[in-house]
Image 1: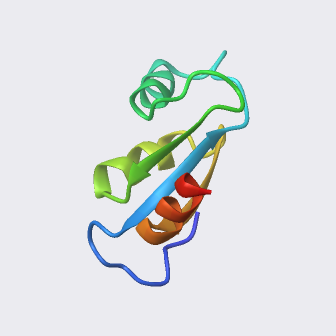
Image 2: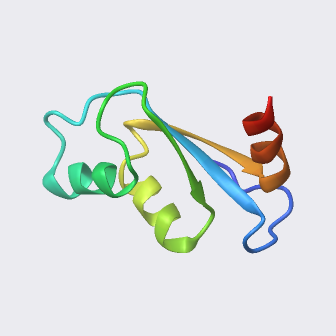
Length: 80
């Protein structure tokens, strides 16, 4: 997970996709998955780029992939 190129508060988002199962993970990691809106492999969720979200991503980095996008890219994808 690398930092986005432009760090404007509120304009950047993170698209998180679960790629591995939470079975066998520690309870705090499973809780972080639920808090991120994940729970099944392949499920994705778009979240704001905030410190508390980044902390949860760090906790479950072995179970997810994260990609940084701007709000403009998110709105373009929703209209297409």
